[in-house]
Length: 382
Image: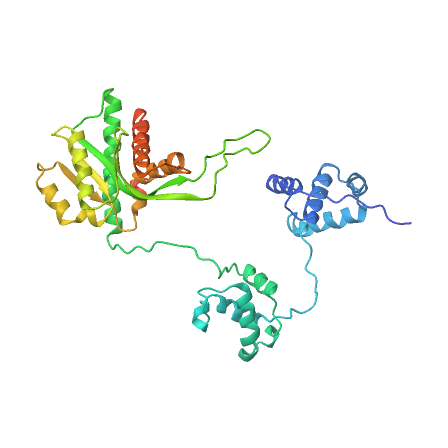
């Protein structure tokens, strides 16, 4: 007579229980892991192999093996299949290493017109050159196998991810200068709130930049409005007509949120000086205007320096962002908002209409100015 199967004590901590519940309810986990997680949770509630097997539609020995492994190896280890011996891998580890090192170089280095590898080209190259390099196992290498090997090593030689190199040796110092200006803005705002009055006009801080290349594009046929049951969106003819581009020169007052803007065909020194004249007229004569801007040639030209030198002392003070540090300029967030809410999908009948609509957008934003705030902490700048 067979011995009676005794219940095995399975101890599950709160953390393991939470993980098992998450896996048991997951839709993306393998079915085997989901099933075993449910076994362990059910056995925790009712420690009986037969009862759990009956409830889950499994054989009681399946439940017993899962529980015994969880006790011996841990509940999370019991969810995965044990490694099987299988056959020896056909592609050797040395061949895989050679293939990966090959993928980490550019295809043009091997005489191909391609800049980067494609998986098809890489597989072909490995088939042709691999045996000569001592890797006979690569003679019949398939493109799919190449993809699997590269995935295992997390290598994507057919893609490019861009980055910005810090070419400014004084990047940290210049960034600190910009952040110090933002700290000054914070102090001005706090003083205004504490005094329950309008911010002082002794200092104005303006974040400035240009947004060039805004296209004036016209439709060649009327847009079709949404129609219930037919098409839910506006329908637009694919063809279009170009009228040229314009540049937006804009600065946002970081204390009041007001936007100062000009729309011109270009953004040379003369247009930048015109914008400075706009700022000069917008603030009282005693206001010190601090401008945060990038290192565009128009901001550093002889014409600009000569114009600033003719102004009253301390009227204008420029704080330059470091090279490749335009993300430090708060006006970039405003440009992003403008592009998403106004310029996206815009169609006009002329360049003049585009200019008028951009300036109308500036007036719209100035009706309820939004005060932009820098949230990056100064003590973390380094």
